[in-house]
Length: 196
Image (cartoon, rainbow, N blue to C red; front, side, top):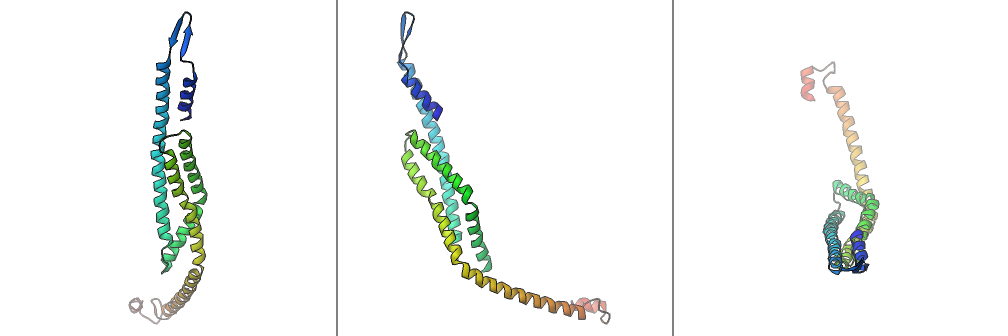
């Protein structure tokens, strides 16, 4: 965009009449045509950028909507809690890369505004509003993670109880297998297999 904008400015600033030896040549039609064509290239590139960038903004909005939806899921089971905490971790790990991508998008919208392209200000305002949703999402994730501390403690206690129950039942099964299972000298192999 810069190249074509610079060409339009430089060509527009050139004198439209040239003196060649004894002839005077009027180049205003050629000059006007070249300036117009260069400006059309700037607008064309700007429109192509806008199409790609608006699609990227919409994709990011949809991604943030999905994260927000999952973030507000009520963790009734351990799997639900893991799911919500996974989303919190996803949001936290994506902060750096997402901030860079958002900065890049903001800069691309700002560039189109600098070249006074049609609808650039409206598109920039809409995109910035949508992209600010990421910082809101980060804050929500932090708040939800803090709110889930009690839930995590409850599930930790339940898990500890389940581990103790599992350990007890495994020990009982091992003792039973040792006393009544296959391979015990006093029990027939077929009978031990049936008991197993």
